[in-house]
Length: 314
Ligand code: SF4
Ligand code: SF4
Ligand code: FES
Image (cartoon, rainbow, N blue to C red; front, side, top):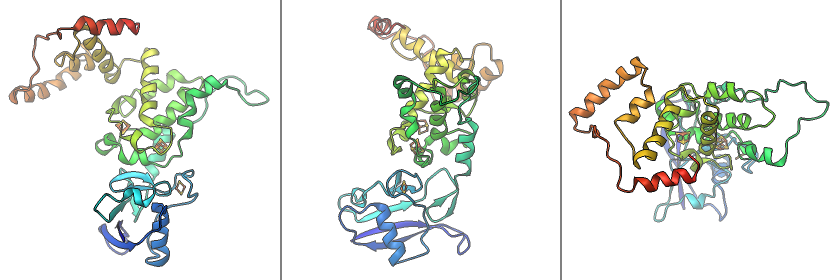
């Protein structure tokens, strides 16, 4: 017998959220969604969640199982039972307000998708038939085209937890869908927009969105592709791009990071305001004796690292 510990919330009845346990001896092969349906249909009809296709296609049944975002119709309940434990914790998606039980408000999610202008911008007159792509061209946007807008990546994104201004993985993946599209003519404008605060460079590279994405869209890899386009297009007048370039320069020259120089190069040598903002952090590090060495020493085999860069034509 498994216990489904479900986070309940109904502001019309009670102001706070709480957990309620439901027992269900689910049959082999039952998905989490099958179990929720059984609980709703036989134990508590007020249990609220979204569902539609039951086939991991519509993206509506996103929720958290044991603390991680997933599609309830895609995950078998048995896979969520940890050995020796009979409890499966079910909660609404994170980083969004909860409307009721497992139903969250996607308003901000959609606003951020809108922000990246998720439509083709082509300055040429529309042809009589469709604008075509070669299979190679399509391959560049194939992965991100599989996104079903389920919000799983958005729910578990670590940056969004501390910065609501961040566009988030789904919107950035959607942006790559058009930046990488051979028929789109707004690459540079898009990349400039995406390089502003809250854009691609605010991703912390944690990779959590790749773990949570139920499709091959894998947002973090799409964000890396956007960053590559930004560097190739020379859109580097921002902290994020400067940080990436400084990072590479440091490793290339000494085989490791020059932690005194990278913050300064990231902010920019002539950015007086930005440099002054570094002072309190530097002082705090000094007081905690965490200041990096002023004289940067290369690793013993730095020439081998340089050789790797040369082999990659850097
Ligand atoms: S890799 Fe970036 S976008 Fe993905 S979850 Fe981490 S911080 Fe968010
Ligand atoms: S990128 Fe993946 S996890 Fe994020 S909304 Fe799209 S399908 Fe869902
Ligand atoms: S019900 Fe459609 S993705 Fe789960």
